[in-house]
Length: 585
Image (cartoon, rainbow, N blue to C red):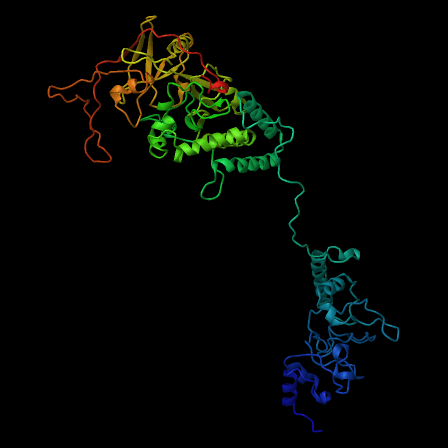
C-alpha cells in the first residue's frame, strides 16, 4: 500500500475516518490538524474501535488532542517524568523551554511504576480548579542548586497568591474535604395555607342580620385581625379583600374595588368652599366615606329605619350622579353609583367578618395618606345609610386618631370621643302641608342640649339665618352646611344651644317653590323674598367674576330680604325605630 500524503490524511481526519499508516504523522503535524481528535494508530484494532484514550501502541505517545503541556508539547496525557537528581526539572529555571517565573511542578504525585521517586502529576489535572487548589496547597520544593535568589522568592510570592485563590474558591479543600456543590434554586413549598376565617367565630346568619349579630361579627373580626402577627395579618387582609370582591367586584386592573370613596360633598369638606378648612393645630382635613344603599332591607334589618319622611328625597337617589347615572326618576332601579352602594351593602350583610377587615385596612391606608399631607382624616361610615354605631364600634375604637362623623335620624348617641353625630330633621308641618313624620320636638331637645341638627330647606340658593320656635319662643342659629361636610367643626361652646346645619335643595327634579309640598314636609319652607328691580328682574350683588364656561361676567347672587323661618307648634313625633325593626309599621 502506498503511503498516503499529509493532505490525504487531513481529509480522512476531517471526515472522521481512521487513516492508514498514522505512524508517519509526526507530533508537529498533528498539532496543526483540524479537528484535533484521538485516533487509533493501529488499523487492525478489534472491530476498528480505538482503545480508551486512543492509545494502542507500545510507543507510549498519544496522538492529537488539545496540547496543554507547555513543557512537553504532545505529551499532555503522559505523567511528567520523575525528577533526576542534579538536573533541572521542566518549568524550573535552567530547564529547556522553561518560562521565567513558572512555578516548579508540584510534588506529592503517585509513586512511579518501579517504585522510588514519586512520579509527577499529569498536567491535565493541573488545568482543573481542583488540581490548581491541590497544587497550591502542596509544600513548595527547595529551590534548585544554583538558582537565582530572586527567582525563588518570586515563585514563593506567586505560590502564596495561588493558595489564597484556592482557599477563596474552595474553602473546604484545606481540610481535605470536597468543594461545595453548586446551590440549586428551588421554590420552597408552602409551610401553611392561607389564613382562613377562624372556626371560633360565632355563627352568623346572613338571611337575618341584626345590630347585635353584625356588631359581634365586626368585633370578632377586628380582634382576630389585630391579634395576628404582621405577616399573617397581611395574608388575612388579602383574604378579606378577595372575599369582599365577590360582592363589590374588581377594577379594570383586576384589583378588589374599594369600600371607601368620595362624593362632591366630601370633596367639598377638604376644600371648604373657597378656602380649605383648617383645624386649630393648623392641619387640613381629608375626608372619605362608606356609601351603603339607603333604606335597604334584608330580613327585619333596614339600613335607614326612620326614612319614611325622606326615602323618596334621598340624596343617594335624587342628586348628582346617583340620579343621572343611577337610574333617574325610577328610584327602584340600580345602576352605576346606586348599584355600587347596593353591592357594598350586600358584602357587609353576607360576609361582615371580611367586610370589617377590609374596611379597617382602607381606613388605615387613608389615615397614612392624610398624615403624609399633614392632614387629619375624617370618615363617614353612613354617607347614605343610618346604621346603629354599635355595629362600627370596633372600627371606631380601632382608629382613635381618626374622626368618625355622621348624620342620623336614629335615637342614638356617639359611642367614643372620636365619634360625632349631627341629628337630622325629618321636617315640619306648616299651613301648606301636614307632616306626620316630623321629629321637631326631639330635634329641639337635641338643640337645647348642645347638639347640632341638620335641616333641609326648599330654596336652592339661600338659607335662613335663624329659626324661631313659636311653641317655646327660642331662636336657633342657622349655619351653612353646604360649605363643607366636616360637621365636628360645628360644635358649640359648652352651655350654649346647638345650631341648625342648613342644607339647600339639591333635588334634580321638581319645582323649588313647592318642594315642601312635594316632599310631604321634609323640606322646610323658606321664602327668601328676593329683592326685585323696577323692571321686575331680580336685583343682584355686583361681581367681577368671569365664567370659566362662557368667558362672560358671572351674574351676582340674588339679594334675600327675609332670613327667618318660623316653626309653628308640632304634633308629637312618632317613636324612632331601630335598624332591627325598620320594616315594621
